[in-house]
Amino acid sequence: MIVDCALYAGGRRLHRLDDLQVAMREAEKEDGFVWIGLHDPTQEEFDALTVAFELPELAIEDAVASHQRPKLDRYGDLTFAVVKPVFYVDHVEVVEVSELAIFVGARFVIVVRHGVTTIPAQVREALEGDPEMLQHGPAAVLHGILDKAVDQYLDVTAAIEVDLDEIEDQVFGDDPGSDHAERIYKLKREVQQFRRAVVPLVGPLTRLADETVPNIPAYARPYFRDVQDHALHAAELVEAADTLLTNVMQADLAQVSMEQNRVGIQQNSDMRKISSWAAIAIVPTAIAGIYGMNFDAIPWMHAPHGFSVVLGVIVVVCVGLWTAFRRNKWL
Image 1 (cartoon, one colour):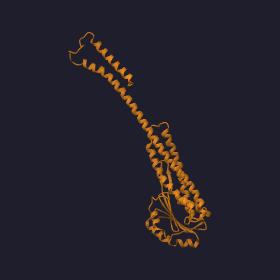
Image 2 (cartoon, rainbow, N blue to C red; image 1 turned 45 degrees about the vertical axis):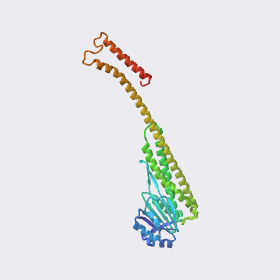
Image 3 (cartoon, helix red, strand yellow; image 1 turned 120 degrees about the vertical axis):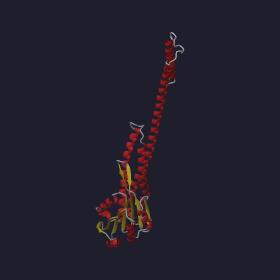
Image 4 (cartoon, one colour; image 1 turned 90 degrees about the horizontal axis):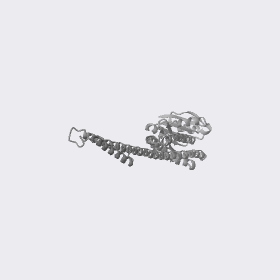
């Protein structure tokens, strides 16, 4: 749907436009520009925009279909950009990614939003309160959106660093043998998704800062260069977070493996002790079982010292087994 469509001239908002067909004529008449905001538009709504603003078909396909990579394309006198705003849901450690497709013409700027983001509304409110910046037209809108998006990148990297510190404390803290692989893998997956939003944007920002781009005046390059610097910093932080998560995951797996080995060794030691005592207990049990059978003709059954001899044999054999097991460190 069309969220807003307004005419701007002289650094201020004049009025809302309901008829897209007369929007360009109004912009030329007032020597201003039209700013249109759309949220998940239908193909029919884009058909109306195509007729009114002569948008290129390839750019429309990219704007209608979400999940595009951040980029900057030139179509004659039109500049088309894609940027992915993000925000971090801290309690579930999820990076939510939305998408903005921006058409920048000489007298219009069209912002297409997919997903949940407040950046277009924030930029519109900020520029409407800053007539000096608003006088720069569509270039100021593009700069404002990119600047806000990159600022969000830095906010998200700061939030992720807090969770990274917490994970490091868990892995190398008081309970190093616990398995934190699920949390680490989940956060690494979110960081990878975040990385796909940040890193590809550096190239388009470099072009805006260094090259001649349609409808972006040369005097605006320092502003885009500042955004580029922030984006490079955010990209470095994302790469560092991804590398750190990989290292922490390897350390966690190594610690879990060591703990499992330690438990296995302890279990083997316990089994040797149990087996040793069972072997010692078998001797008196076997002898007692033999002499406890209901037969009369058993050796030493009626001997005067038979009982003492049998007890002596039991003691000697048990002590011998105990000594042998102690020598082999089974006990």
